[in-house]
Amino acid sequence: MAIERIAGVEQLEDMLSEPTEGVTETLGRLEGDIVVLGVGGKMGPSLARMAKRASDAAKVSRRVIGVDVFPDDALQAKLRDVGVEVIRCDLLDRKELLELPDASNVVFMVGMKFGASGQEALTWAINAYLPGIVCEKYRSSRIVAFSTGNIYGLTPVERGGSIETDAPNPVGEYAMSALARERVFEHFSRTYGIPTAIIRLNYAVEMRYGVLVDLARQVLTGEPVDIGMGYANVIWQGDAIAMILRSFEHVSSPPFVVNVAGPELLSIRRVAEDFGRLMGKAVSLTGEEQSDALLGDGRLGYRLFGHPRVSVEQMVRWIADWVMSGGESLGKPTHFEVRDGKF
Image (cartoon, rainbow, N blue to C red):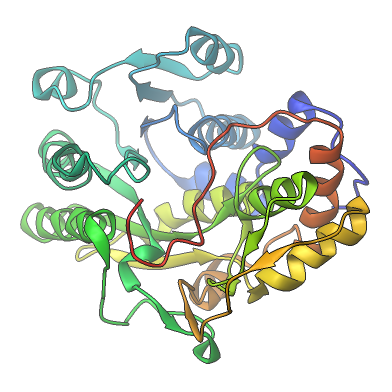
């Protein structure tokens, strides 16, 4: 993208929800309405809006329905303004969930990661119990379910990242419950024949949150940057969403599994130094780079969906400008540097 800077939230949200030609073609062929469970999270509003924009561009009349607890009334209004229907629902309330509208297509975005330590029971209820109820409700639908690269555990950096056929090696209750989520979806996919896709994400980024935003804010404030987790993958959130929506054409029983991860193996040290140069700040580093990290190999996704439109270099420049200009933050650090699985 040849945009020098992102001027504000309105422009950012428009960019994040801009459908690619591939997404428009996919949703033009897809039959039925789309329900987005957990639409209120970091990626949900952009995904729902992209689904609506792509459907309109393809001249397909469909309902795009966003479901969440919606503690923020402003988000409901913003979604309605762009044509997304909203339903307030406590998804852990089985009765409420089963009364949701039927739909041919479901995006499952619900999950608990941060705060899992100390709330292990709730983490397992959300990540492992809830998918079973969703499969009961939507047994006749296609389901695209979010997961995480954390299920792989640490992998040697020299390998370039875990691939979809690697045996899971989750560390910590969050990663274990995320693997449980996958297994529950797999069980019901096999039992009911539910066409399913499981998306292992590592790590989505935009101006208001993400690995690069964490690093930029640390450099700006002079906070030491921990380089123990020496490498990471990042992908522009708009590119990740495009890949995820296109995965509806690859759902299967048993589930289709794909990594959605950035193509570059990013050195945390080098990215921090890049931010330092762009911001005119000295960079303080702490820790020692380890030989393994949480990394996903995204080549299968690129073969199917093409490469990301936005490069890491572009994201770094945009984010440096955004952070230095006092741009909005979601206040949700990724904690990508955590190596013991305790979030």
